[in-house]
Image: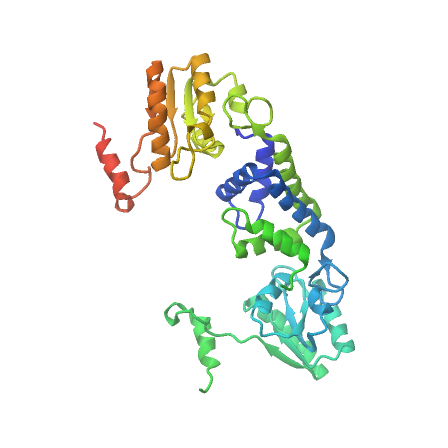
Amino acid sequence: MQSAPAIQKLLDELERLPGVGPKSAQRIAYYILNSDSADALRLAQAIQEVKSTVHFCQRCFNYAEDDLCAICASPSRDGGLLCVVGEPRDIPPLERTGVFSGVYHVLGGELSPMGGVGPADLTIAPLMSRLASEDVREVVLATNPNIEGETTAAYLARLIKPLGITVTRLASGLPVGGDLEFADEVTLGRALEARRPL
Amino acid sequence: MQSAPAIQKLLDELERLPGVGPKSAQRIAYYILNSDSADALRLAQAIQEVKSTVHFCQRCFNYAEDDLCAICASPSRDGGLLCVVGEPRDIPPLERTGVFSGVYHVLGGELSPMGGVGPADLTIAPLMSRLASEDVREVVLATNPNIEGETTAAYLARLIKPLGITVTRLASGLPVGGDLEFADEVTLGRALEARRPL
């Protein structure tokens, strides 16, 4: 109410960000007000730059600054191994594992009959033409382990298996470092079903 | 590592904000990437605008867009009642109480011998000239209830009392709606000392 209009406008914009409530917005706004102009403007410029230079990779629909994203453009990635994810934000956690050497395909969402998301809303057609033109031997379905993700994985498996390509799914089980005591029944049930000989 | 440089730059800038760690920075960055260009650019513009239009009120050192802040410029505020705070961010919570009808003075920090903040680093000289030229009957010392804030309040009280102006301090005690069980000893001790007849 007593805030200067420019501060109020900044507070309003900050509160639209995910995970930022009125208190964090105020903390961030006062931090920006307090900081060097150069520091604050670097944030503004980073936002503008990301919106002007980043678009979708023509091949996998990950975020990219050139025609191809850094992963698709890399000669060291295994093009025969293709990991399908829902959103670009699912790629960094998979990359951080250091375990995956293949390439990705970003669906742009997951099937959700309730949410009105059908196969035509996702990049399933481009995925199928990639599978027809590229030499892919295995598709890893890394959609989320929830209803939408499982539905999407089942749908894609039905489409891809007839092409003679191996289709796999990320394993479900106990989180490493987690406590058995705090695991939910469904996760624990999956972990039991998928038990491995030692 | 595999992020586009523009995304990495945005992540770096977001992580500098208070309360924003790597995970929230990633969440916010993907939100910005996903959102309409217009929405994202409004945030960038709000940051630029706040840095270009907001400066310190000439009278009380609160943030202001004009020479005077909205509170100093308001004819309905009681200029005889002056509340001294450490930072501009301390004013909104006091305003939200709806209890205070006076004006403010922002010190720009609190005395901290350990942190190298002395009286000359704060707006104490301008405060003293306000008290000499304005008709102030009471100064409310609303610095933080911690070592620096108490030190600052004690220092100011010693300077101001000889002028014949009433000097008061915000009450310490139990937070309203809080649980006695969870109150720390110091707060509970203060609440006992300051007990009131009912």
